[in-house]
Length: 250
Length: 296
Image 1 (cartoon, rainbow over the protein chains, first blue to last red):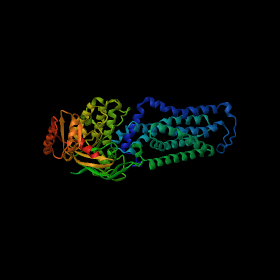
Image 2: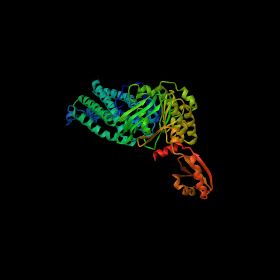
Image 3: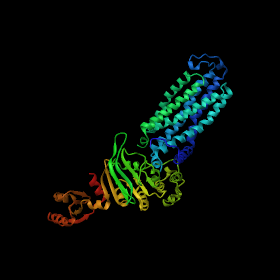
Image 4: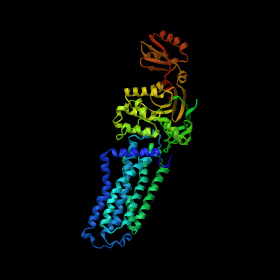
């Protein structure tokens, strides 16, 4: 009961239900786009514009080891700030939605309607997390495409940089599954889940900041991806090993 | 009679240490309508949770249609089982039709029959949270019965409903429970008496009574209902030595070993004491009497 099974018919049917419910509220869909748009397009766009201004084009000499060789403010944006935004967007977009769908289902007791049907609790939680991941991926993919186009047009970074950044985004999304599962099982109510979600951001940002500061070149993206996947894996393992789905129903 | 539901030496201890079921063994034969009674926290809902596969027993084995829960073949047994959960919350963003279609797709059947049986055709377009309590319960019943299941598990199916909606749900239940193995968890003793023929009473995670309702009623100590013009307190004072006396409105209920021989004797004693007795009736024990006797 505590292990994930391959996606089968019941998970696919529950997945469709989750997506349908998500799309039903136009207001929720629109407000759900706000955070990713701010993190993926608005904030990086403003930074890039300011980094491209004539005053910012002066040469710099960073003293931090991982930023050695970066001689422009634009470089700081590409190798330091931009990965932070990617990690935040990749982790928070699905986990905010997942916490809502998983916890609210328990709080309003509609989970009973699902448990009464011929599905397992594993199926229910898997479908919820998969639906949130899919919705987040569909939301973030076009935003990343905008970022990629802007970076390729306005900076000296090449396709390899874009690919490395995409790897970080994918890893953050994957890690968010484990984190969402852990938060949903640990939190007894929606408010606690939100608090935990908020508290989770700071250590993540510190680790990400250390990683992009200390690891040189494009290696920082690879290191970041490995760290994120390890974090997601650890969260999933803790959730399934110690918390179990029994907690979800109690 | 083959066994449809079986609990064999089942203990369920939650992670917080609470023991919900303590080495219980009971079974339900195919086609029987059994009521699971007990005070709050007796282990009724845990029993349903174990049968629906949402919980695993700490010790022992739970079987549904001859298959241990969670083992190979359980998924198939689950498709032959309908479950009506206790007071479920309703989706504000899913219509009745969408939920019923999900149930039908999961059971791999058509939803048409259940829609017709429960008169839901005109309400399908409404979001579930917008339906009245009675119709919400009908939707849940329709989902549970969509596949014409052999086993029906009902966890407090009328809790929270107004008397009219409760009556409607009882009408539906009386019809759909015929010919099926049914396990009904309820606090409503009248509901249990009307819908079931066997009873299992749980208390603090243990089975304290199990049997056919008729036999349990017959086994309960018979009583006499007595009323006098002077009122129940005067009767109680006079009958104090005859056995346990309970005031019941304007009358009293006296436990006796044999109403046929003891009623004339008690009547004579009351009349000799100057009481104007105007009622003396043997009372058949109700399920409430059986229940209270068992749990007190």
